[in-house]
Length: 143
Length: 321
Image (cartoon, rainbow over all chains, first blue to last red):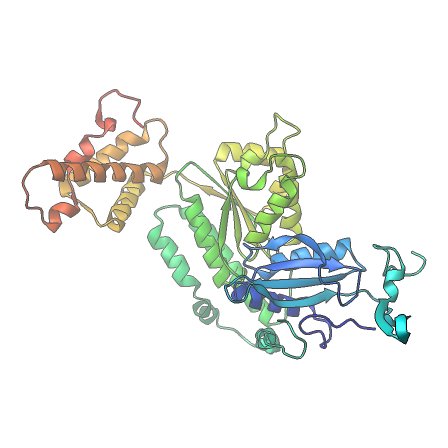
């Protein structure tokens, strides 16, 4: 099941040129970019691991793409996303965030029901990927 | 917030599409190079270079060659002939004050106009900005600087300080290794210019043959002649809104002739310092002369007295700064 998270998540995955164009757009707006990665696909997992510090002084998309590629190389089977943060008063939030790498195979989620007191039912989503240990969740079988 | 289905930023990725769609020229077509030249506007940059920088004939010749190469490369691309991007990493060697940094800035502008660089900004750094203070500090620091320079020119001033032959555990070596890697792999994203004094740069390249071979253009900045220095002085003083009186003109030339032979002469930088000091003396002369009425002409004119007070004119004194 394909994870949809962040901007453009219903579009096909971007090529590096398209990613560069989006980075350029963020830079033109003065939003510093940062790269983050994770292998926990749960929708409530909002704090991903930071790949280095946010890039404040860069003026060219190549610099961010350089870090994206470094992160992809280090974590070839993780989710990688970039965030563009708007620090202006009144915003002070992420303005643009999208996934730039996803694992080749995303097993998806299962719905768990829990019987509570008084025949109450609680629901929770359980990502199949988290059944394997952190760091090895999306590796191909046998590797 | 970033919400799917609300693609506020989508139009920007359509921007560069027309470029790609631009149809390839047939093999029998001809292109007017003069026309392409005008379109890119490189002549304005080259003319500004000629006008504002005195002398430096070999440097200017090489810059023109590079400009022509990139122009031809652009035209070849329009015919669909693709070749690897030319290697444009450079080294600038020359005495102090010969205009290495100034040419670096111009080079960044020129490369942008020719479409070689996307941004054309210049990031000027020294050893301090690249080399860390403890183990593991150097690599992130150098990478940070490299990222800042992407899309433009990374200008490393006094690059030979990166390598300290006497201390093999110096962190400079680590910085050099990262630079080498970036110079090779990210050739499309930035141009690295190493600048420094000739003799020490030679030694630096001797100890780092990898660096030397990755640099295609070794530009040597010659020292200025007396005439050129005088011309530089004229340009500087004009920019500051002053003029030399006719007598001061000859005095200035005399000053330069003496100054060249003295120790620590640093070409255009010495000229600038001389002019700064002449301004000081002119100001105090005007304030102390007593008479109240001062016109624009007096305020703008440098007199011989302002120059003659310099220590350079003291006979047999070699200690002049």
